[in-house]
Image (cartoon, rainbow, N blue to C red; front, side):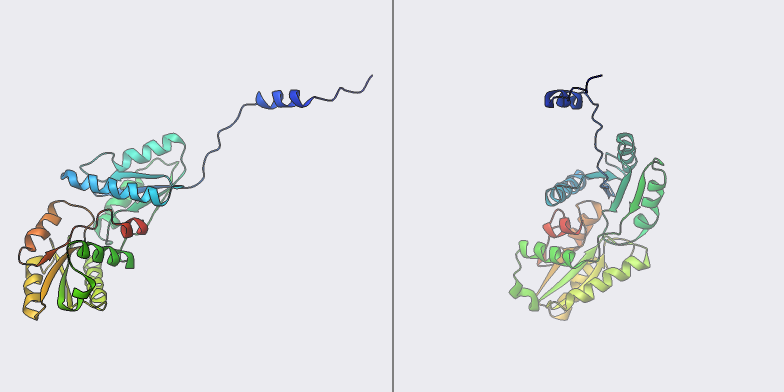
Length: 253
């Protein structure tokens, strides 16, 4: 028998081209941002703006958004869609500033109902973080203050409020830490569940002798409680915007 004829380069290429090509599935986890949701349309719009900024900062990371209530897509719907695509690993990131009921109970309960093929890790909440303090100051400066105003300005750190003692303690701790960066004084305040309210903290800072009083909402998006904070800031000299899609917030994510 004669020697086998060597396969030409063209034949090898044709042979390779006829092989079925299996899709290569990324093993990088998908980040699912878990937002609370609100009847106020500004809430979802702000969340989506923040997520768009996160995507621009991390182009190699797939980022999806799900809501616990009021808005779509729901967290459950997002997880079911990912499982249907064949995704295995998910990081669920609570879009929350403090670790209270939603982070401790609501979100774990929703994640527990996810399709079993998903491996889900719940990340920590966003705060406290030096980046969030930087975002608060950004919003105050955008509202008209300057760094030179700090020694004569009292600030109300106004959060949504909670019945969770851990969350309340964290807000108080942030206020104490922020005071040491040069402000005349910083007082925590709460829009619900806890005291003092924003208007009370504003009065206290005026009584303390601060030349001006500014209210810094420690909330991520507009809605019912942020509107209550704004009403409580009626006698303040400056009211900052919510944190929203501030660059520093996107970097925390």
